[in-house]
Amino acid sequence: MKILLVLAAVLGVLGGPQIALAQGTAPGEMAVRVTEARQANAALMRQYSWTSRTEVILQGQVKDIRIDAVNSGPGGLLQRNTVNDQSAPLPFGFLRRRIAEAERQQVETYLMGLRDLLEQYTLPTAGKVQDFLSKATASGPDASGLFEMSGPNVVLPGDTFSLWLNPRTRHAQRVQVSTTFQGDPVNLTATFNTLPSGLNYVAYAEVTVPAKQISVQVQNFDYLRNN
Image (cartoon, rainbow, N blue to C red):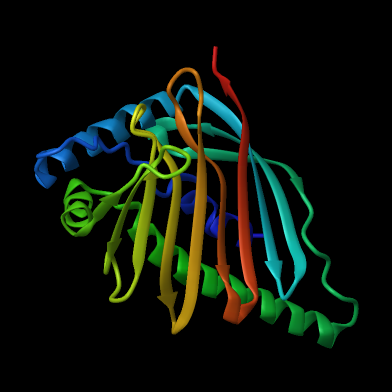
């Protein structure tokens, strides 16, 4: 079912910048550092294969679970080979089947639009990173030793983007986004792990739309370096 692939890619890469918390560093210079660190991390990720589990929950019911084997293909594009697809079966009966298919299509269309919005929070260019850094405020360390960088109005008026960093490794540890889509509040959280090789990746991510009773969860694990 396409619904499981709509947000998985975004949830898998959101918020992966490494930011040097150096005093007096201009946002433009720091944005260049972030972009270079991202490129290095992306190059390292191309050396790995891993497993990704995506789950869609609608109105309190698990609608789909999909497990994919993931690796980088030509040009660094992710390739997903389905290991297990547990799509929720449609009910029997022609009329009820039509209703279920219409509901599924409606949810897929909604999530595709939501994906397009969330992609903007990946801060895909140095310019976007610089815009965020110019608005962000830094605080910390917190009880876990992490520094937080948080900025408002990153993509839409009234939104917030927060990033927690390990000051020693400069790796992202957690990301949180609060925004709106079609008038509905949307929350996204992601937590990161770092391998001994230095690869920083999203271990778990979830996007929730309470008004629609929609939740999409992604877990990435079993990272293996290709021979």
